[in-house]
Length: 240
Image 1 (tube, one colour):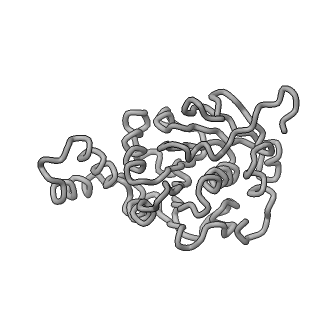
Image 2 (image 1 turned 60 degrees about the horizontal axis):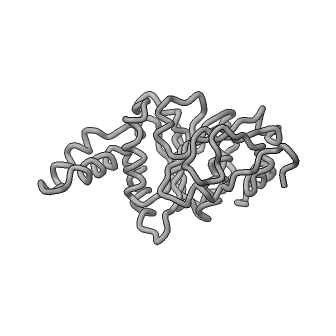
């Protein structure tokens, strides 16, 4: 229990109690990635993880991928070049499969989904038909920030496309973020001096739906969050 004057801890399970998208940013990268993993695991025992990086196996960050916490069938790698929006593909596919009598909203959502990178489309399609809404993490989105919209109007259709596909999206990025982050329902910032000093780290809520334990402006120590500490304390490669 938090002491007197200590902020009430967030309930990480709140992220999955609605059709909501989450954006977590901050520094250093290892802190952001492990926090994103903790958020995902609190809402899905087997989350899907898309890792944006130059090449599989190349990383100096000790995150969930390097720790071996993500099963092979739930882990997807995509290079920054391949993670760019697929506008041309979306336009061609739209003409070939969408009926002329489809409602405008349906056409827009379908097109936005097709603009997602092929690897992401494939991963979403594999998990989107589950009975409950599965968690889908897109990690290291700052590596493709230059190729995507930077405002709420441009980013929200991407979030809506994934929600429409039946998944619960969690995006992570090294800060500083763009104003487009506010297109997500939850916006969280995870910060610590370093991975070794994660105990001095904090999670700040910048935006959250009303009625959840996440209060905009509130900051909670990472060590006070149930289901988070285990992903910082372990140094083993086996999944926790």
